[in-house]
Length: 447
Image (tube, rainbow, N blue to C red):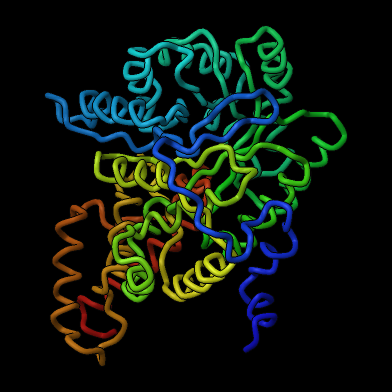
């Protein structure tokens, strides 16, 4: 296969040709390593934003005296202190994150610093009740919880699912679009944008609203990583190369979510991990994913939901010694993406929007255990594989340890309550049934 054919197949041609003005240069010399966090300047207002942003959807949790899951505020304060000390100044949260606890925890941690030393991004996450009254209350509560009198970046949260009709119901018919425009004029919102989950038809419709001047988006938040660059689910989600190119040609600043696909790209299948380690033994697997998205200049910041100090320290290292990828490295990443897509993993990012399940099922826990078994090589493909019985027994034992019996996949009744909440549009009941069938075959030794 010659290089031209490879580019056509892998999609790297879109990087090398279709977005030549914004793509990494072929065989570009390694830039001198900076000693401080890489900063991107928002061309629309001059904001100097850290290329690594803090996603506040995965704060660490502990149990309170009553056994309830609460955010570990001491741990959050410690991580924010480290992040601030190392130049991270963009913090993205939502009223929906961690069952309503994320904003308050972020507010406590950040309010210890001067307000002009960081940027706050939050959202109108009116999924359940989109009445004007409930939406206004959510908006006002965010100010209180985040201990601020203005938002730097405010988003219409997760638009795209349901298309324009759903957007109108959540934001137009109730007057919230006009209200938020007014808030921007008053200075209580500095930048108004949206986060997107949906198909290409929906995305194009929102871009048409921008082109016509009906709605001026100051920025857009999209899911982008080296797998979704060419291998997103085309029915429910759009390839990131298309999203990026459309935003880039309109010069709309881009915020990136899920650069690691909910952590899956930090724990890739063994053969892919080996490919990374052969090239750079001292670099983490996650750093490759971050370098991929950070290499595109329209990106304002890359959000990472760092739940502990170890990934925070590693990510800071990546972005304070940042090396943009050249064309050859981009091609290499797309080859790894193709390998990853060969594995039957569930496209779950562990956002937990589907929780709590009314029947008590640990949906994200089941998906995480299943995906981890694939990436760690403990997945049973058939009874003919080497060490089949040992691997089979290990999977069943680990499943029971990770997921309590009453919360396992076999208790799903396909009520569909979870479907309306999943930003990835995963057919959750179907996937739970698929995993349950797999587990039952292992139990009955009929795989």
